[in-house]
Image (cartoon, rainbow, N blue to C red; front, side, top):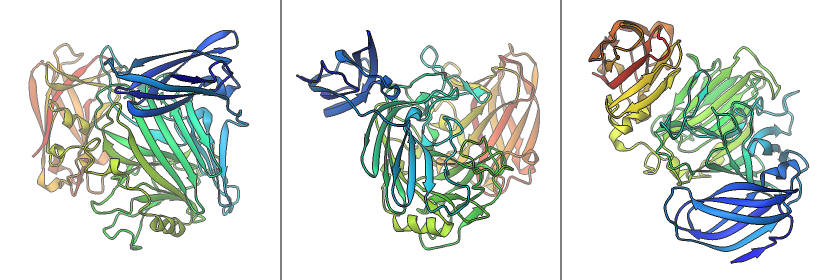
Length: 553
C-alpha cells in the first residue's frame, strides 16, 4: 500500500481500493491540537476510487496530517478488501459558499453549504425587469435538488420523526433538513463549464441528522440549456417501500405563475399544450398536476409569467407524472427568498434499493414557452434515464401491481399504494394488517393512490368501495365517524363536494367490512385517481385502526 502526503496538511483524502461489500471509512486527521474524525461511505468495487473532503474545509479548516483510517462493512458482512493507494491533498479555499458557472447565456449558482444544490439560475438576457434569480432559496427544502423517500418507522432501528404535523418517512434531502441544517459536502470538481458535487443529505424530519446516503450531481452549461446528471446511493441497508419520488424537486420564484406541459398523444410534433393558469398548493387544483399518457415521451413542463411569457423549463425523460403547485398562490414575487413559491416535481413510483445506485438526468431551459419547447425538442434524446423506465426491474413496480383492484396489506407490494397524513403507519405481522396510530387528536387520514399501478381504472366500472377494518376495544370511543373522498375524472384531489360521510364504525376488536356506494357521488366519474379515507373524525391520541384490505368492485 502506498500513502502519498500522509504527513502533510490536507483537505481531501483519496482511496484506491477493492471491496466485495460496501464500506464505512473513518479518517482521522490532526486539526489544531485535536484529532478529528470524518466518516465516509464507499461502494463495493473491483477497482474503486473514492475521494472525500474534511467537513471543516468549507469553514477554513485544514488537517495538519493524516493520523489514521479505519474501515468496516456497512452491512456487517465479511468483505474481501484491499487498499492500493491513499493520497492526501490540499485544495484551494473557495471564495464564496456559492460556486457559480457562467457563460454568455446563463449564470448558475451551486450552494455548497446546502449539499451542492442549485440555488441560483439567471437568464442573462434580462428579459423581465427586476427578475434575476429564478430559483426560490427560502430554505433548505426549496432550491432545485435531489430528494428521495423510503421506509417508515422501524421499531428499534429507525424513527424518521415528524414534519408538517405528520409522521414522516426516510427522506434524504440534498439541501438539508426542516430545522435549517445543510447537507454535507463530500467532494467536488470544478472546470470551466462543469461542476461535479458529491454530498451527504440530511433526514428532513430530524434535527441535524446526516444520512447514510450520497447524492451526486454534475452540472454542465450549454449555449441554450443546462444539463444535470444525478446519482444517488443509499447505504442504510433498510428495505424500503415503493414511494412517489421527486425527480427532481424544483422550487421557483412565485412571479412565474402559470404552468404548462404537453399531455397529448402526438409527442414532439408541436401539438397543443395544456396550460394550468391558477394552480394552488396541496389543494384541489395543485398537488398532482398531470399524469402523462402512456406513449407520451414529451415529458417536459414549464412555469412562466402570464404577463411576460418568460419562464423556466424542465425536461426529465421517462417520468410518469407532474406534481406541485403554488404556495401562497395569490402572491407574485420576484424575490428569491420569499416564502411564496411555484413548485414542480416530476415523479415516478420507485423503490430505493440499498447499495444500488439510481441515476437520472434532466435539462433546464429558460425563455418563452415556445423557445423552451424548441430547446427540449432539439435535445429530446439527450439521456435514456433507464432507471426511470417502466421496465426497470431494480426500481419500478412489478407487473403484480398492474391491474390491482384489491389493496391487500398482507402483501408488501400493495403497501406502495397508500400515503398517511397526521398518523403513524406500520405493518402488524400478527394481524397481517396495516396499523394506523393516532399520535394526537386531529384530522387523521390515509390516501389510496390508484394511479401508481399504471393501469387506468374507470369509476363507472367500480361503484362500490369495501374496507375491511378492526378498531380495538381499548380505543377512547365505542364508535367513530369517518369521511371518504372519492377522486375521479376532473376531481384529481379531495374536495368538500366529493366527501361521503360514514357513521358508526365499531370499536369492538372484531374485523368488519365497511361498504360504501361510491356511485352516489356525482364526482365518481371517469378515470380513478385516488380515495382518501379520513378514518377517525374526532380521535384521541393513541387511538388505533387496523386495515386488512381495501377493494373496489
